[in-house]
Amino acid sequence: MTVCRGCCCGTDRKHPGVDHAGQVAALVDGVAGAGRVRVTDCLDACERSNVVVVGPSPAGRAAGARPVWLANVLHPETVDEVVEWVQAGGPGVDDPPGLLDLCAFTPSRRARAEAGEI
Image (cartoon, rainbow, N blue to C red):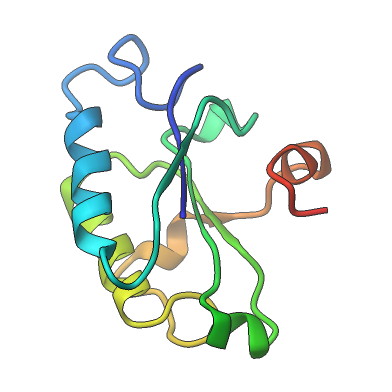
């Protein structure tokens, strides 16, 4: 999983009152054993902050899954759903829980290229 933090995502200036450091800690602790969390400075999808990209597990990739980009990961409930999904196998293995599928979006070609997907 890649968590965008830097330009807009993860800043009090854009999202005051959100515990940005706590979100990253919850993701790291929550996916331990099921995946890794990588923090990056900017994924160039600032209008959709906070952005999290969930990559498929080896089983998900074998099933043909691609990384899923999630927008507006701002609330503890959304973070919990991301963790739940990764623990269940993520893209290609299990459907996103709760309302998480409403957060999914297709980033621009440039953003995907900068994230190493193209």
